[in-house]
Length: 208
Image (cartoon, rainbow, N blue to C red; front, side, top):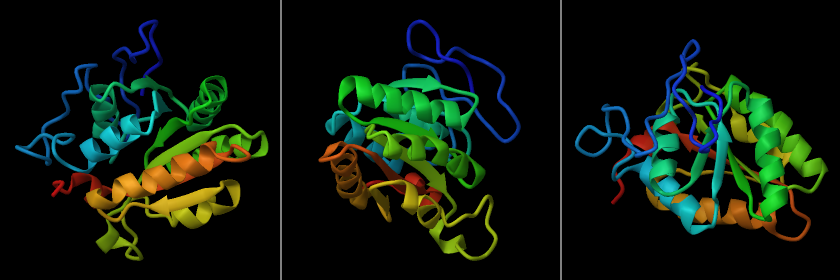
């Protein structure tokens, strides 16, 4: 993870344990998986980023790592300003503030398990203070649920009491619908928090 620079893009910095850096602002991603070996091109990462941009999301704050690093790159390629943090709670508070100032939910991006749980501070803050916020968290492969997968956690159950909407995108085709419902919930009526779970196998799946 890295701090935000004056340009709004996070400058290079050393990654913490188990964490990787998003690519440069060009949106080029590391080469493992995805279309032609590049995640973020023609897969769930790209579908998610494009759907967020279409819904008017302009800012994404977060801590990158497995499995969401390419999503930060895809978001930048889609025109969303990504601002890296070293702590999910701080990123959540910043995203909630951006949502309040712009009137459009900003995204909080976290890794799975502990990262998603740390993001609950931002969800709770946004929900209690009527601030539009959308948390996006990676999660373990759907086929590994209940088997003690890497950082496995029932994240939807964990966040439900702290947000207006909590859903999971089961496939790239499902992403636009789930994100639209989440953004509508976060911004509509009494503004608040929404959550979308992004399984790692869904993110790596080629879009139809």
